[in-house]
Image (cartoon, helix red, strand yellow):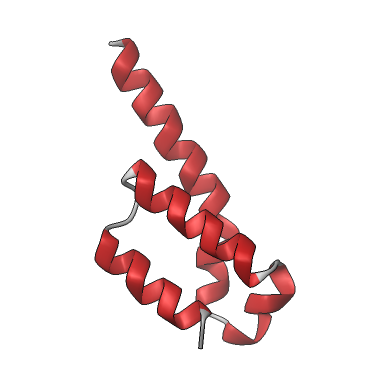
Length: 67
């Protein structure tokens, strides 16, 4: 049971960290104003490692950030 609680908390933490990054994807004009590209990449990586997003989603969002 502790493993499931820890996994859930980790996933929620990653989602919260990623929320500002994901919200910015809908509005490319504000993406770089909400934080650095590097921070967005770190947030994406954390979400991928936590299993919140797939590798394909990570690659797609990473490519958008680096445009």
